[in-house]
Image (tube, rainbow, N blue to C red; front, side):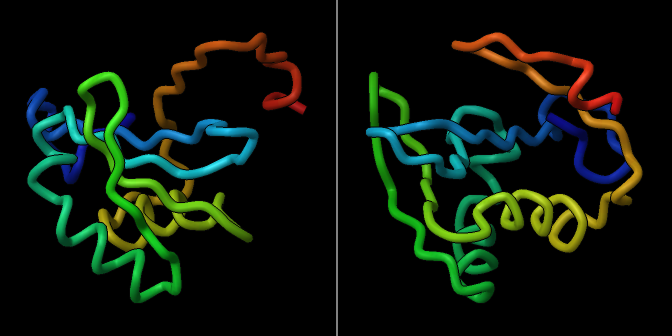
Length: 108
């Protein structure tokens, strides 16, 4: 999670998500946060221009965009750094659900 631009408003918080769906890791653009909803079409266009196929999905009454495939980690990075112009050194919030995360992996 991060704020788009210099804004600290809750409506400007962007949420990027990676998840496993049917055993496949993918990038999800969940359409709950106001900024995610507002930027949906531009993110779809941006991802397509980078060569990613994005599908619109819904699960548990939650709509989202999903991309899968090679170099999927690069998509989130490019959205953060190229689309939103956030410096690659900026610290982002990380929320982990569904498995244990060894924080020493990040710190080493």
